[in-house]
Image (cartoon, rainbow, N blue to C red; front, side, top):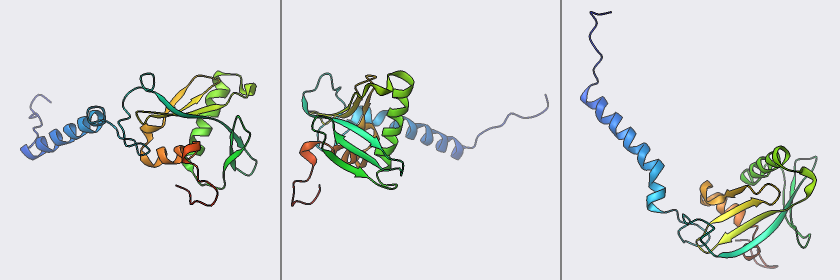
Length: 165
């Protein structure tokens, strides 16, 4: 063992290693320094919701059926907003499962407290569990998922006779 030579990286290997490390740093810290733009408003979403003005919010109830469908209702009016059938809208389904699991573990599952979807002036979109206080920042999941959740807001819903946004 004492007679073996230490392993040395070639110059090309060192360059590739440096590029990988630099790329990782850019991926981790780039959104923080560059700002995250929201697809609903086009504004910077990096500011916390505590500092931003609330533009719109809607209280939601999620009801799952035995067939695997999820109906989403406006908690105040009782109006059905949308029904997710089959395997459509995987992001919303995943969020509902995660929040339901968290509620079972940390709060009274039977409280019936709604979830609040909130849009702030800085473009931040959040979903808050009113029973546990847990807040999920939808902006962290990218523009496609922001649009999927944003369509549940009253301002984003299609009016009768208009195509959905």
